[in-house]
Structure formats: structure tokens, C-alpha cells
Length: 235
Image (cartoon, rainbow, N blue to C red; front, top):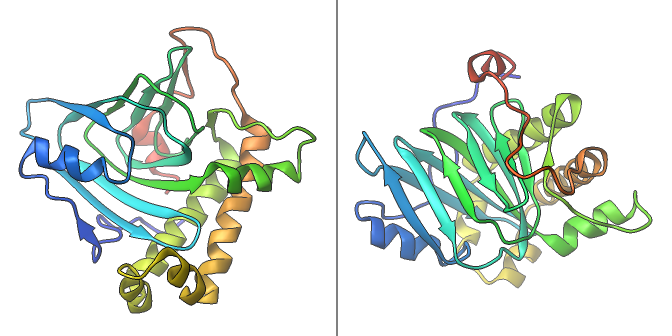
């Protein structure tokens, strides 16, 4: 895969992160209510750019400090966490899952106790749980979405689809003009190429989730740890 640029989705809304309380309020508009903590030595420095498409939203997150988020309510949407550098870890109460370059994490719609990021750059894709279940339902008799660590070909396919879509967004002025439109208008006016790219990404996630679901790991276990330096060479 071609080298990933340092910034993606750079033309879209930058959440005000000069003050922690302001950033927390801003992000609570589109993520579940949460409490944030920053562990140095760097000062609080988080960049959050977000774009809305038809079925999904893509967020670029970059932070230079270790960040811990304590959710106060469950998430109703599934979320793909694709680190470009660094790693992200979630604690579900029944187990711990780690995402790193080369091993993205598909988080199920659920309550998590803790979200922790090292200094990182990552893409996060929020998508309706119903849409993902619909796609998975074509492969399983009883659709069930669990937290999934994606590996190997599944990870490569999902990463390629996600980064490719983010690059399409960066190059599109049309998508920028749609950000202030209603959800109905956005879906109706979204270029066909983006609709197709969204569909392909959701289908890739459904395929990966079908093959790699981890319903209930032992308490305290860590799955899919990987050397960041080694995995970066794959991207």
C-alpha cells in the first residue's frame, strides 16, 4: 500500500482542543458522553477532523499525549478503529482489545469502560449497527456483532478501503459542500463513487467480522498485540 500521508480529512471541521473541557463537549456531540484524562508528559494536544458521508462518518484523530476516555453511556453504533501510528486499547469489562497498525479493531455497539490511546494517528469509522448487521446477516443465520480484531487479508482489505475512502474525501469539494446539508440531502446528493466506496467498506467489515468475532475473551486478556515498527512496513 502507498505510504499514508501525515494528515487525512484535513479540510474538515477541527474540534477546538485548546481546552480539555471544550474538546470534551465538542466530541460529546457525536460520540457517547465521556470523561477524558490526559497523561503527560506532553500537554493536551488532540486534533479531531470529521466528515459525514451517507451511512458512515470518518474521523481523523491525532494526539501527542497518552489519552484515556471513560465513557458514561453505551455507544449505539459500531466503530472501526484503524491506527496509522501508535495504538488504541479498549476495556470492555470482560476483556481488553488492542488495535495497532496492521490490526484494526471493529468495536461492537456496546458499553465500554475505558478507551486508551498512546500518542497516535488513527482513522475512526462510525457506522450504524443496523447497517452492519444487515450486511453480516447475508453471511450468518443469526447476525451477531462482537468486538473483532482484524488480521491479515481482512485487515489489509479494510485498511485499504478506509484509507482510500479518506483520500477520496480529501480530494472532493462536493463532499465538503454537503457537510451543512441535512442527512436526507447528504444521502441523496452524495456522488455515486462515494456511495459505492461506502458499500464496499461495509461489505469488507461484514466479511471480516464474520471471520474474526471475539465474543467474550477472558478478563484481562490482551489480543492481537503487534510490533508497531514491524507492522508499519505493511503500510
